[in-house]
Amino acid sequence: MAAKCGGGGGGDPDKCITRYADAGSCLESQRYFLSRRTVLEMLRDRGYDVSDSELALSLAEFRSIFGDKPDPERLRFYFPLRSNPTKKMLVMFLGTEQVKTKDIQEIFMQIVNRESLQGLILILQSKVTAYAKKEMDKFSFKVELFQITDLLVNITKHILTPKYEILNAAKKHKILKKYEVEEKQVDSVTIIVTIINIGHAFDVLKFTVPLFHMHNTEGNNSSVMGSKKNTEAFS
Image (cartoon, rainbow, N blue to C red; front, top):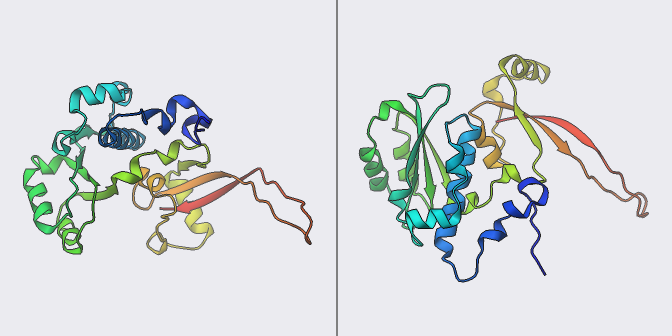
């Protein structure tokens, strides 16, 4: 039986992860390819200047450039902000060894032109020690951590992912006033980590969520189908 795709434009087979699981191929290169593509899509959504050609790179083309077993160091890349090209995001893939303090210190020493960095994204394949995370706090720019397995599918492209938008300052103020809270009182929403990370700290997101809520009434098999509901969430 053919596998059905649950996301990527309502079940479009051309965007289903199963089409990359070609028999006899190297899964390692597939994993790097898929996670790299998800990060590129995320950066474009955040306003970074990611070209169409980068996103259109096929698995075969990726392998021709990086091989069946890519060297993580060759996969690092920078992309500038469209609104301010002097500010860039650096993305680095790390190996399978546990990340320790000395590893973070080495990464810092490898970075040139640190003053131009908007942030650093580290793609992990293992755990990070608590001391290593503390070392990251010393950086003058924001460091974000993602496990490579969490990036194999872009959750924002899934058919069940709610539509969302980042509210402007005026709408954000209105929401904060409505719920009588200050920005510093708002907790982070971490249900869908990838979606929240598309925005920035303390963005307010408005979700349009398709509701398919079903319940039984007094033992009967009746159901209630909701249509859509707007929900404000803080990130």
